[in-house]
Length: 363
Image 1: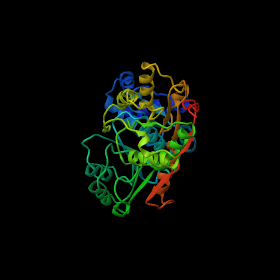
Image 2: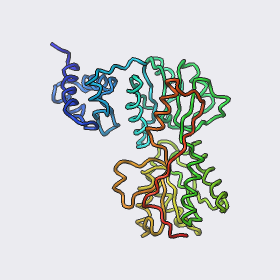
Image 3: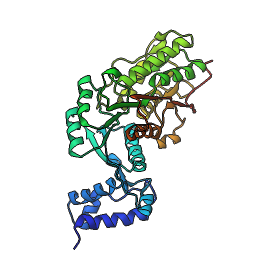
Image 4: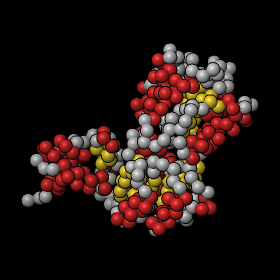
C-alpha cells in the first residue's frame, strides 16, 4: 500500500494535468478531509510538488498550477543546478509576492528548485545563513528582508559560500559589501526623475510624495530623484510635499496611504498630484479623495511607483505608473546567480505607463 502523501501527490498530478496554468487547486484542509489524513501529510505532498516546479503558493490565497507545470510534465524537466533560497517578509505585499512568483517561474529555466523562507520582524541575518546551510542552498535571493540591512547584517552573508542577490538599493557603500553579495533593483533615482518630468510637463507644480511603504534606501533614492527632477524642470526642490512621519515595516500601508492623503490635502498649499509607492496605498488614497469629493484625474493626478496589480486594469480611472516589471528584475538577478552577470550592482531603468490618472489640464 502506498504512503498517503504519494496517493495525494498522484491525485494532485491528475488535477494539474487537466487544469490550466494559475488554476487554484483544492486547499490543504479540503484534501485532508477528502483523504482522511492530517494537514501535515497533505503539506508534505504539496511541498514536493512545489519543489518540482509544478505548483506555486500564494500566501493565504492557496496553491495554484504553475506556469510551466504542463511543460515539466511533458518533457520531464529535472532541476539539477541547485537550490535557490528565496527570502521575503510575511506582510501582505503584492510586489513581494509577484517577485516570488517570478522567481519560482524563472528558476525553472535555470533548473533550480525553490526553497521559500518567510521572515518576521525579529528574524536575524544569522538565522537566514543557518537556514541556507541547513537547506543546502546554492544561492539566495532576497526579495526583501523587511527592514534595512546593516553593514553587520550584510557581513554575515560572506560566510554563506554562495551568491546572494538583493532586489533593493544597497544600504551600505559597495566597497564594504562582501564579494558574494550583489544588488539588482529599479533605478529609483531615475524613477523619481521620470515621475517629476511626467507631472511637471502636465503643469503640476505642487507634487506630494506619499511614501506610504516602509522607508528604505529605495525611498530615499526616489525622493532624491523627485527633488532633482523638480530642480531640472525649473521648480524649487521644496515644491515636493511630504506627509509627516515615515512608515515602518509590518504596518498597514493602505491605512498610511489613506491617512496621509487626508493630511496633505488639508494643508494650506495643496498638491495637484500625488505619487504613491504601491497600488494598495493608491487605492486607499483614492478612497480618501472620494470622501473629500475630489475626483481623479479631474481634481488631482496620481502616479504609482510599482507595476499595477492585474485586477487594477479595471480601475476607473486606470492608474499610471513608473516601474520595472517584476519578471525583468528577477530574470536579471538569476543571470547574476548563474554567473552570466558579475556586476556588484545593477540598476534597471524604469518604464512609464501613463494611463488615465494624470491630468494635463494644469498647463
